[in-house]
Amino acid sequence: MNGVMVVIGTNDLDEYYEMDTVPVMGDKVVCKFLETKVGGMLANAAAVYAGYGCKTYMIDCVNGGPQSENMERELRECGVDTSYFSVDASLPDPRCLIMLKGGERVIFVMDRKKRDLKLTADQGRLIAEADIVYSSLSELRAFGAEEHITERIVASGAKLALDVEAGTLAEPEKDFLLLGWADYLFINSGSHRRLSELYGGDYGERLREMGAALVYTKGSRGCSVYAGDGEPIHVPGYKVKAVDTTGAGDTFNASFLYGVSRGWTLRECAEFANAAAARAIGFMGARGGVATEAAVEQFKEQFLTGGNQS
Image (cartoon, rainbow, N blue to C red):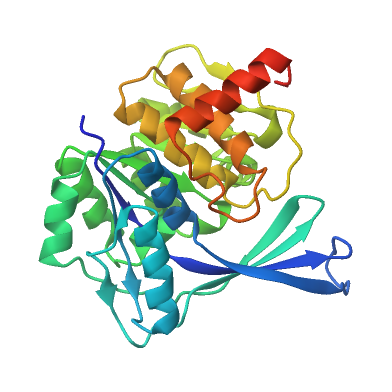
C-alpha cells in the first residue's frame, strides 16, 4: 500500500469562544470570543495524515469566495492537494462555533447546505486510484445516492474508513448497510450510544460480521478495537492537561489510518493514534495534531518513560 488517501469532507472556519459556565437548556451564558482558526473534522484529518508525509487529496464543494480561498490555501500549506475541489457559488461559508470550558468543548456545526452533489469524472478517477478513502455518512449523503458512491469506493479496492458521528445517523436502515461497507469505523461515546439505541447492543457484532473493524475512541481512557473474531484490543490513554480537545478525534483517526497504510498491526495503529491525539490536545486549534511520525514517537516515549499513561 502506497498510503494515498482521499478525504471527502468539508473545510470549516472554526470560531472559538470561552464560556463562563456550561449551560443546560434554558440557561444563558457569557461567551468571550477568543480567535478564529481553520478546521473541519475531515479536513483536520486530511491535514494530519499529510503531515506524516503521505499523499493526501481532498474532495469538497466550496463557494469560491475569499474565505473559501483562504481556507483552501491553508489546507494546501499542510500538504493536502485541493485541486479536486468543485465550486458552487450558492453555498455559504462553512462555519463551526466552538465553545470552550476547562479544555473541553461544545461544537455547533452550521448547516453547510451541500445537497445532491455529483462526482466529476476527475474525482471518480481519483477515488479509483486511492488506497484509503476517509469520510462520514453526512458527507457521502451530500452526493444524494450515497450508496452508489460507497459501492464505487469499495469496488475500486480502496479501504473505506468512516467517522461515525451520532448526528449523521439520519436513515437507520440505509445507514447500517452503508456502515457495513466500511473497513474501519471510528466510533466515539456519543455515536456508540446512538448506534445502540438504533440497532441494539449487538450492533458491533453484526457490523464485524459484515467485515468492518470497529475502533472505539474514549478520550483520556484510550481506545478499543474490535475486528473479526479476534480478541478485542484495549489501549490506555494518557494523563495530559488539555488545552483544547477540538480535533483530537480527527488526529486519532488519521493517525490510525497512517498506521494502516504502513502495514502496522491494529494494536500498533491504536497505540500510535492514542499518542498522537494526546499530544494534539496540548495545542490550541483543531490542527494541533499535525506532526511528523518522529514527533509522535518522541511524545509517546516521553510519557511511557514517565509513567503517565492511564
